[in-house]
Image 1 (cartoon, one colour):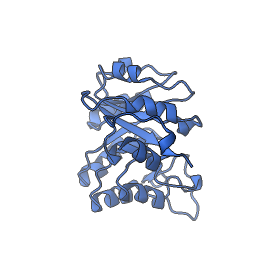
Image 2 (spheres, rainbow, N blue to C red):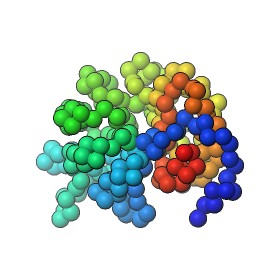
Image 3 (cartoon, rainbow, N blue to C red):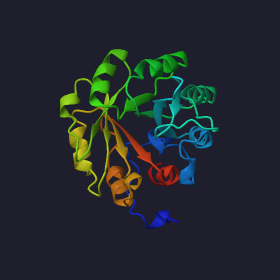
Image 4 (cartoon, helix red, strand yellow):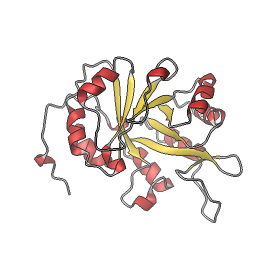
Length: 231
């Protein structure tokens, strides 16, 4: 158990100023086996968090929640429409970060988002050809940045930036401020998603000031800890 009073504390001016900007990675879960389950996804939204989850189509052309290729069995998948319907029913304010796991599904996503009048979302992680093809859909799309990916060429066609952290070299506050000159919205992947310690990175984010003119989101496996630290 992390003791919060052992962390370095600074004044609470962080740009991450509400639970809605904390993206619960594949839902709110304690057991990793529950990730992307109906229970975990709904619990994250009920608690007021934003949500990161994965979209693909099944053999019947339905949009479903699944990180890996879905194998048809006795267990029914969570459909994207059922999740969005629940989101609307509880009047959630959480941001929806939609990780695109297969090409060619923009029109299916748009139909559901439009029907339920959902506008606090963005799509990311699609292939570059699919991202370019998706421009015509008018949906919010984020480019990616990491040690392997340079998003500069995508500035004019994307609405924000997904900043991943595959190794232990996470972006510093100065890096984020430099990126903010070109990107109004940025979502940061917390290092624990890749098996690294997250506390130093959180300290970096903490010092970013609310007066800065950009929006920041954090995708994390530890939404409760993040809420206790940032809010």
